[in-house]
Length: 173
Image 1 (cartoon, rainbow, N blue to C red):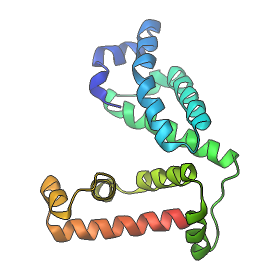
Image 2 (image 1 turned 90 degrees about the vertical axis):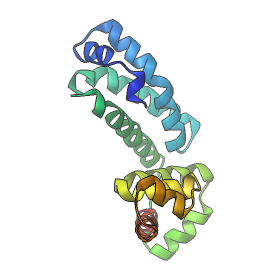
Image 3 (image 1 turned 60 degrees about the vertical axis):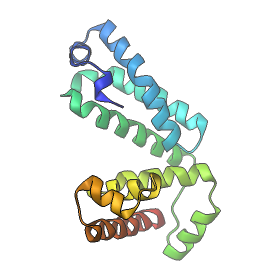
Image 4 (image 1 turned 45 degrees about the vertical axis):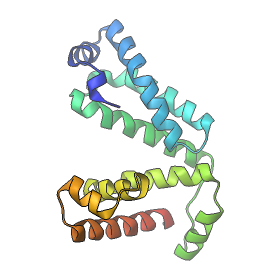
């Protein structure tokens, strides 16, 4: 969610308990929450449940959010936790043996795998996540990533290698 879509005045009024501001904040945040939930949750039904739960949590806890800058990260972490809770409730468990886990990944439904990959990306430290997203999602070249980050090719390649190793470890545990 872009913090720019929410004015500081609206956020502050909602934080202080203004019912109209809270309603407007919920309306503004809902499309981004739903989009993120659809990308993160294992099914459409779970995405809808996660969206509703995130909106309810936002309604109840908007007064505890300290700044507009922290709002997006807080809200998306609520959605991510809710998607993971729903996945756990559905009985999704990780395999114990790494080789079995890698084999199990290949057999998983696409929606489940998408949830796991999204969670693996979220678990990466930011400097690894940025490189991995640019390379594997945006399909940028190593040179393009290096230019965008102001880093050397070697730095980008090392971060990409480490990011993939961390993701593999996350997905197979």
